[in-house]
Length: 414
Image (cartoon, rainbow, N blue to C red; front, side):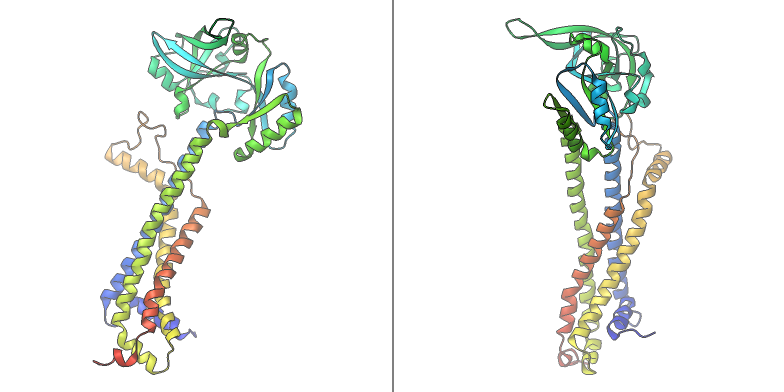
């Protein structure tokens, strides 16, 4: 099969079978270094994607995607929910009331965010029903002031189902200070464990009890909680719904409460990606050293090719082909191994834990006790493209240097 002279010689130099096996070894180490860099970058970014997915499922599965609030308590939340459900992006709409206060138990106190919910409808918008480790949502009955607390709160106060604690909430009054604390006795009827900081900062009560604590009518709620299809469209969706309902309604969404966390996670992924790209760059530019050694070793061959008519451009192409072959092979090997490792990293960590008898991610220390991984093909394409581009750029200087060799200078000692 016909092949251009430059491609034929460049591929042959990559193997270096004629004389210098050391050059072949250096080429192999360049491939291995590039492959390891690409592999590490794919695995690490996949693990970070997995952590971000887990945190999204756990945190955004508990907090509202968006809420539609009234200027005053909603008397007819069903009409607001029906209006919201007309938007194709809205999956579900349920009543919701939110309060902030302090939990007190035997002299110990901690801040808490109380969510007033309808237990019969909460499954539509939240994962809390699947995360309850003691009790159930149905144990929240109106008028009984039951509360479901997080596992961290239960462990901190050493609470179990059936224990009682005190909720302190601020209340506007005619007192000189304008605000007085109101205390309400709550009965622990359940404990949930999401595996995030919400386990220590969130609690659930019945919406009728929340209305009574706020001196509202039993059927009044603060807002309507929405679950949307696209989390990143929650701001636009809730804003459009609130605008269509009139000026007496306003919208809120998860970006106001949890947006900084996910922005920090996104920035962390970007910075780690750039740092890992430096590893790929070092491995790619190792090709420079390889090609310079090849150019020095093949000086006589280059001179002979020039004397029989090869142009400087052809000489340059020969070494660009050799470096590109090293880059392509190393990147492909690293990409394939990285994809395989990303799909199996969780099983690999589990196997290491079983063999060593040590838990790398213990549930007592970390919210996530396993190593999650989510491979995104866009990341793979970007990493492999970066490896190929850096490998190609690394060939330019050695190839240009080879093209500048003068035949008489190279053959003066031959």
